[in-house]
Length: 169
Image: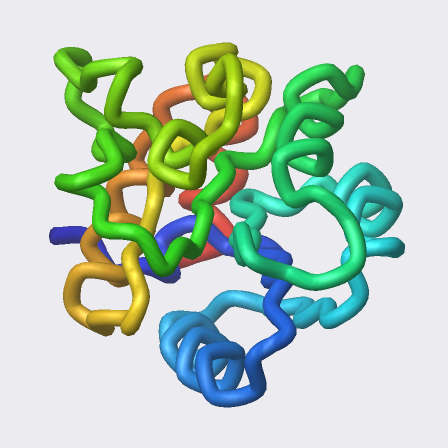
């Protein structure tokens, strides 16, 4: 597995739980990333659009505004490079159908498990690229982040990818 810091850049963390945020920030900074930790969801979208981070890690249970709406705005934004979205959830990926496998059943979505109507997670603009279950397992978190960074690198134009590799040397 490549070291997480092989791509240098910013990661935004939207998390209102101090313990979770401290652990995530520690994992990310130890891997060479600049981490911007946001507690207020009201300013998160503005900061994400302004900074265009490699990854936005969003707590689905954050107080103040809908994390789904933040995710949808990121998908709809006219960005040079859309950040990959990692969502933190208290719901199990297996039970809620939030894993990344293509065979997930819409009837098992997070919204259905919460008793909602038409599940928004069936609409791609409301979905994160990956979901991490709480309590946070550091090894699984790092593995999922690595997979997102592979996607980021694959999506980069070759010239930009060469510049990133040069900076890492």
